[in-house]
Length: 148
Ligand SMILES: [Zn+2]
Image 1 (cartoon, helix red, strand yellow):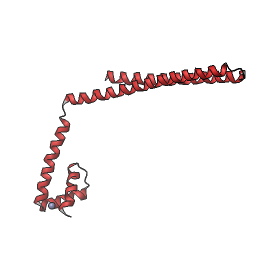
Image 2 (cartoon, rainbow, N blue to C red):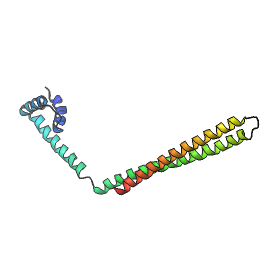
Image 3 (cartoon, rainbow, N blue to C red):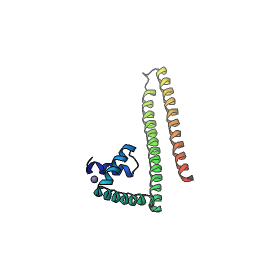
Image 4 (cartoon, rainbow, N blue to C red):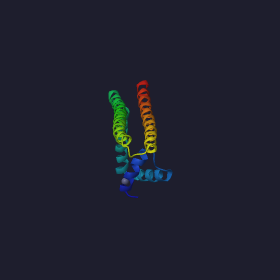
């Protein structure tokens, strides 16, 4: 085993990711190679330093990230709401225009007109249902964050 191989092993060793055989191999090499054992000490202090940075992260930074997250979620919720509402408005407007044309057209049979109106009714119910679901999830999401 060369010193180069040991460098990869050392990082894994510090993360506790080596199996018994690899640990033994590394320790045997460290016992006879001062350069590598010195390097391991450096890795060790570097690792504890970076671990400390993660642990002692300033609290307001954590809060900032928390609020960014809430903001993103609310923002996305509002985006969904607006898009759904605009979609419904467009569908209703377009639908009315189309229905107006068909219903006022004397060459279209009554059966087709009724079928069309029933289809529109079904579509409206579906859209309202989707809207309500969106609204529910949005509120649910918001309350969950405020309560925490
Ligand atoms: Zn070595």
